Image (cartoon, rainbow, N blue to C red; front, side):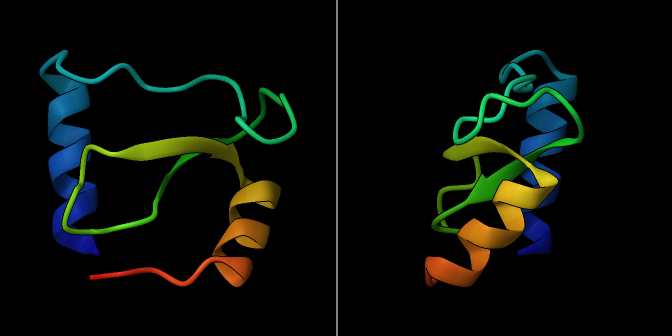
Length: 64
């Protein structure tokens, strides 16, 4: 998980990935986080607010 997160943030810093600003689930704009479905694809994320991210994590099993 940490490797995927680090690679994503390095890519954002390098301008290769644009950080999301709107929650893909509820449309909120506060505290947006990257949510990984599969940590082997670190740049494949959806952008969710903290509340939606926690709910999504509890509902969707992750692959490593």
